[in-house]
Length: 239
Image 1 (cartoon, rainbow, N blue to C red):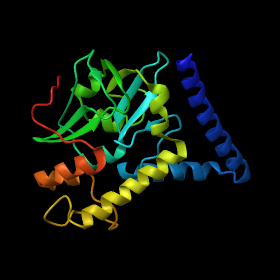
Image 2 (cartoon, rainbow, N blue to C red):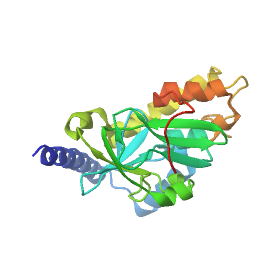
Image 3 (tube, one colour):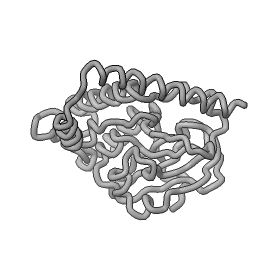
Image 4 (spheres, one colour):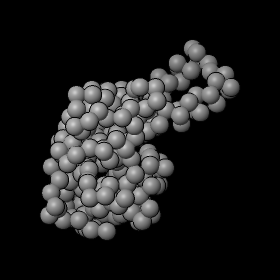
């Protein structure tokens, strides 16, 4: 019964957002040529400003989730993580069957020997890995927010309680951009590196992959400030 109420709540949220978007489109119809330009512009914005599709939940720890028809959660890492780390050399996760708590480290993304560690958006048991993305971590960026772009599935235990902690639709888009602004500000203050963090050609956002030039303390600070994790070398992982 609880699962049905959760699904109904999700459907309600999505329906309301779609209705609002439809009303606004009727008030201000967008010509076909403008839609093409908008799509091209979105691709040019890069990872920092990648649009988040309706139906995707974003956790404050910077994972994203899609609800699977089976009741499982498909989980990936969001654009802020991928933009900061740039090239992902390998990904590690927990063994299938592992019970995790919300916020517990569940995914580790490596660039060389440095690591970003993302916590679970919900409590539950690890059910499945997406082998293709572990074999080729670049797909995590190429398939960001896509149905086949998840890294790990968990079977949630308390979805009805934890659902309200996530962000969806326009709220998630606004929140992500506030986080991007926070990265800009902290990078300018020298939080991640002893030298100025390189920025994009327009002088705005840090270049994608800026953490590659950061010192160890910079990686630790990013984990603590944005992912709310504290990576350790003895974290039990697999793959």
